[in-house]
Image 1 (cartoon, each protein chain N blue to C red):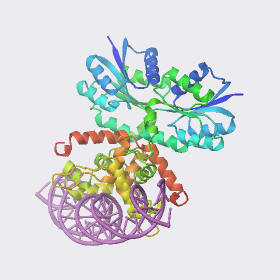
Image 2 (cartoon, rainbow over the protein chains, first blue to last red):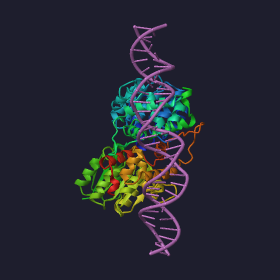
Image 3 (cartoon, helix red, strand yellow):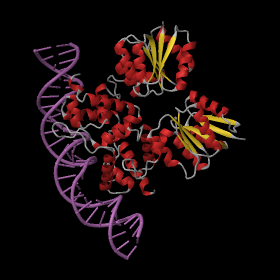
Image 4 (cartoon, helix red, strand yellow):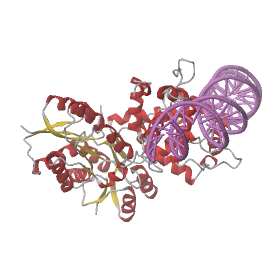
Length: 244
Length: 244
DNA sequence: CTCGTTTTTGCGGGAACCCGCAAAACTTGA
DNA sequence: TCAAGTTTTGCGGGTTCCCGCAAAAACGAG
């Protein structure tokens, strides 16, 4: 019995996925559907899946959170992420939870029916990893590249996004306040807050902290969802820095 | 010749709209389509429309911006807004540009085919205004209600969201710095930043300014798009306060 | 182990923010 | 026009943030 899971909240897109799976040359006897993240997790748990296609933006739990749960149970499950946007925030979200050696794909919703069909084929049947072209550019980030954020910088960005003070961040990440400020400076630099405009009277126009968040948002490095998730992680574990 | 405009970037949804219009009992001889806000504005300018359905989230220009342009030219044009979310940010965006007496509708994409058909009928044929139920709750905001943001508070919220300092806001809105801070205090209060948690050593955990933005984002009072728009408004007119 | 590189930390001071208090200025309605 | 209510402003001081400088600590080859 070969079963696949489709998790997608929009009816139209769900139908579209179903259709594409049906006509693809793929051994599929059953398709089960979820319209939110929690259902997806539950269904994945109850059924023996051959693979899953997850929308990234869903009510209850995001596709990333669902994938994390699914992979925790079965790291070999092939998962295709199916998203509206190629935001760095989403890509990073996915990259952070992919277990080593997992097979997965990352497709944009703008992909044509054919492209999607081929991707399904590649990932589910041949076990390849395929990443949409627009997304690929963001993939290699996270390393030490000159102007891209490192993992630590990204973390601290989230910390100020949820409104933590330097103090609180220092406590959380288990470092001194000055270090936090040092990292913030790096972050500001990378976000291009070096030469901020001044008012006629020589005073600052922008508050670096808030400005950084605004810029990160508009350049899609983070988004509201990421912030919410960071927030809830903080709520349930204010000082994860100590353990990790 | 009766022509209607559909502006929607997602192919599937566009097809869906086309279909619903076709089967509705509405006198429609031609449907023209746009897949981004700019095209929508251009097309509306070139054709003599009977009405338009605009997606709120589109590349180039949002549905709100498009509607603003269209109404500027023809305030009598019936417009249906067709959105994914019932965020206060979007509703407020629409509310701010609706000219007095305009006929319009606000529908969510989760609406069924029937609901949509009826709405099209009501707005385009009978000239009624119809607002999706979930959205209606947000409608009456903006007045002096106890815990909802007034227009000024909303403006200042946007100002800090794009990273402006008290100074810059004061200059822009043409008031004293202390007034800005006063308004910020109101804003903080309404967002529930009154009793912020403290660290064990008595220091603050949250920076009110950043925290306010985070809370506003996660309660959907603003969203990244709103911030971007506020940003570009600021860029092209740093001190609109003086004129308006 | 040792040397060069990176990261973390302390120090210090200036700018920006937060906010209680109360007077001044503006609104509104009778 | 006057009184009551609201908003704006100034003052003052305590916090927090921002950041240059340089020493200390940690890291990574050779």
